[in-house]
Length: 100
Image (cartoon, rainbow, N blue to C red; front, side, top):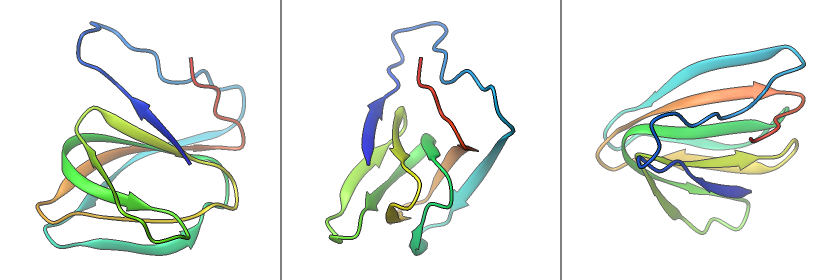
């Protein structure tokens, strides 16, 4: 698991350059919601664009994550996420994720 800061001090921040098929979507975790522990089938980049929540790996240690922060899970890494107040995240999945 790699934590990433997407600061607001840049007018334009490139995230990734894709050279393989890529899925881009949103996930909404409602107040009190949890996305249970599961393995990343391929690399997954999870970027919080609104709200605050937590992420954890197999060890179960919860790490707070909020707007402007992200995490890259590598293929096969077990992880879960949740939120007390609710959050919206951009999720990018691809066989290769090359952070710029």
